[in-house]
Length: 304
Ligand SMILES: Nc1ncnc2c1ncn2[C@@H]1O[C@H](COP(=O)(O)OP(=O)(O)OP(=O)(O)O)[C@@H](O)[C@H]1O
Ligand SMILES: [Mg+2]
Image (cartoon, rainbow, N blue to C red; front, side, top):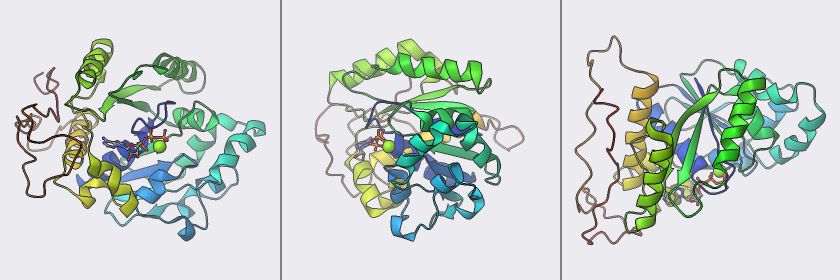
């Protein structure tokens, strides 16, 4: 199944989610392809691939006819491959304009990419041709929403685009989930945004909330997903839980031994100062009495 991770708003956690959800899901045993469709190429470097190492990138498959299998690289992480990008991709947005079937290029590239359980496409912060390609190639759109001011700004436009693409280029496209990111338990605002998003989107919103975590922002500079960089950090754990929730949503257990979804760990960790040893010098004042709802269990997907 293919998922476009999209939101034309910049800096809402698309790439962080793409990298960490992909890595956590790969660690659960799913074969995952991460497609970097952003000329900023942060997903590529975030999994440890240097631009200098790249002879070919997703650009060559999109604009040229380089078979994707010769572009895909293994990351250093089991089950996780990447279709990498560089700044060259910025040219594609323009070059594709005059191409025939310009909106379905990526779909055709991915059809030849080999078999993966899950493909995540990290989109650039725009609704341009690259994002249109991602949505045309995808089965579902995942929308990260930052728990901040103006969180919902532009969301209507994004959803209208999904509708447009569904009615024209990709009839099966739907929103596959909304992910609340950068939740700051110290602020009322985060809580309000989360509540508002849930009111609007109900079950589409993943129960797992990604908190603000310095570790999540540090990890990319080491070319590592957070579960590798600091598995005990709040951010890493949140993405592991998100991956588990994602896995239950999209690969519901059928013939596996456990017929019930795993209960989510007994969270929220009420005033638990980061269970593990390495205290995270995070933004949150850990000593504060404020509970840290790393996850919010407000409706029971598992209860059904
Ligand atoms: N949960 C988080 N806690 C702390 N920092 C975060 C978190 N998620 C993302 N960040 C940081 O915020 C910045 C923006 O995140 P990210 O690059 O994932 O957003 P994006 O939506 O992909 O941005 P763009 O629109 O530019 O592609 C990055 O510096 C990232 O490290
Ligand atoms: Mg990004």
